[in-house]
Image (cartoon, rainbow, N blue to C red):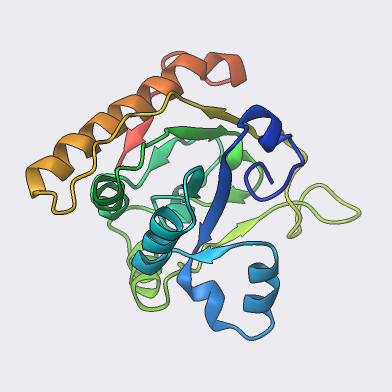
Length: 216
């Protein structure tokens, strides 16, 4: 809603920037569904999308991506703050290749709109979920929200606030052939900026001051 629509006044807050939201590739494999999401402006989260948006659409284009991917859904548990970022470095490579600044963004409240049972990291169910995610690109998460006429069970999200904060851009110099060291250094810088953004705003949005953002 923040980046694909004008519901919260994106163009006013960020004049001259045109966002392109990237979604899971699996979404584009289903007839009709793929047409609907493309009509809304979504692109597939692929190398080709990065290269086209950052290389052919002109200045002011911004790639908006959930770097953790589909498997991050398994960490969407109320009052639980964890991101799959340790091995997510493809977007870092593309930022370097195109000289695109990195902007840390975090949405408080996203993990509170549905309830999900936390399964053990080394348990059978979590193993199956991760395995399915590797095959089809999206894990079979077991979650529930509210119903139309009740508040205890259903597929609708709970009426809880989601607040998105945007940090300062991290300048990136163009490097058409970045080394592993270049990528790792920029990745570390991005992660530190994201954690700092979380710490700066967490108490403002109801997160305990002792709560830490885990990077998995």
